[in-house]
Amino acid sequence: MAVISANPRPCYARLAYLCFIATRTFADVAADPLAAVSSIAARSSEPEIAATVLAIDHALNPAMLPALYIRRLDAMAAELQPLLAVAPNDASRLQRMAEVIYGTWGFANADSLPADVYVSFADVVDKKQWNCFGMTMLYLALGERVGLQLRMVAGRGHALVRLAETPLHIETTQRGRVYEGAEYLAEYLPYPCTDPALFRTVGARTAIAVSLTQTGAAFAARGDGGIALSCYRHALEFDPAYGEAYAAIGVLAAGAGNQEEAIRAFQKAIELDATVREAHAGLGGALYAKGDLQGAVRALRSALELCATQPEPAFNLGQVLYEAGDLDGAIAAFRRYTKLVPTDPEGFARLAFPLEDQGKLDDALAAYAEALRIAPRHVDAMINSGGVLEKLGKFEAARGWYEKAIALAPGNALAHTGLGRALTTLRQFDAAAQSFDRALAADSENPAAWIDYAKLDQQRGDLVPAIKKLEQALRIAPTEPETHIALAEIYLEQGSSAKAREHARIARKLGGQLPESLSAIALPEAIGE
Image 1 (cartoon, rainbow, N blue to C red):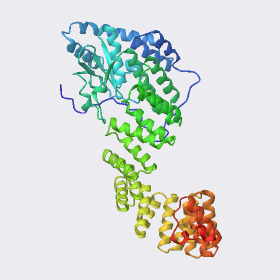
Image 2: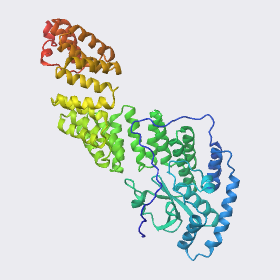
Image 3: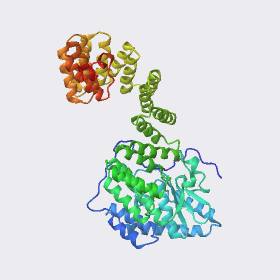
Image 4: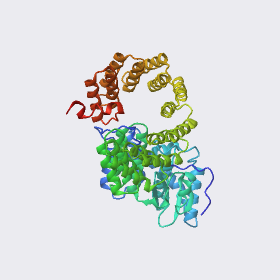
């Protein structure tokens, strides 16, 4: 096999992983913009590719006249056919075809457009705009006219061309370079787990389904969910077993918060083609959004089994395991992610969470330090570093991180709250009160700020203002056990044993860990029960 040329420009598009963030619009449209395409799918077992993709273009842009482009394709084929007729063999015919398309006609002389940018077939023919999908469709359309049995080879978001009944594969993004097989794709496409075995030669109906799905992805990327959904649904009219189209519907639905529809679509995609990683990863995200953490874990693990080096499911698995209370699993998943994407500060910041919860404070601090090395202005990592340092008893160091965070984000309530806490411990009460006032001015609905401010009042002996602040915290978060514990301690200090006992018992019922000073009064025998 020939050596791959330097600086390849592969065309590749992935269905986006959900990552638990809604990103796209999902909506049915009253009038289907591609309704006319249904009749083509229904009446033809092997539709002409050029006529079909031009009909799709016309449906999306009625000003475009398909007949004009059919005539242009016919003229191109008429020019090309005699040149192919004198070529001695298949490889020579494909080489001559590439010379004419890329040299004489000047296709693909400009830079390629990303695969998630919409390029109509008319734009390919008329403006010579291109990506792998556009150039592949041009080859297929010309093949229909010059008698070459060209077929699309599709898989993992990339498309190329094969001369049927031969091993000859044409890479349309390399000026028509011919390979004897698809093995080159493993090196040519610089993405995780590119398996040439998953690239399959497809007929006209599936080729059109691929084209429609890619067109839908381009419209979804620019925020037009209605057209995207129409494209995906019509893709399934041409090939009802095309799992990628179901996965695309799932991504669109999940991004709009329609998790039930997303789950159905992802499960159907997996049923049709269990190798579609995006379906497993998307299913994990949709199940997570529904609160099914164990189901989400299974789906995300399946995505990683298909591709252990795919970063997004590793990150999402870490998040789900953390929320499910599997700290060891979360640490392992986030460590995998940080190895796969060592330049993403968020991976290290998330890794610190389960490390801190396990009491591995030095390791958590090191993870935040790595996040800050990558992103020196990462305010959350600064604030969280301050919190870990407080647990380590290093309050001056904690104060320093809070002050740095405030310098970058003066309105960050958490930074002001943390600074107030550190200053309270350092017995700089007036400065601490000012910090809490700033925190509450930025976010008066943060119960932690009210609790910490109340603890400052308690240290200063101002028990009545402390109680009022804790009542505010209860108004915001009535089931927070820490607030009840703080109230119990203050009432006990006041000598109000009945009120202290009441709040201590509530805190215990809510799962709070009572300090030794409150454990005894919360017992039933404390009042003779």
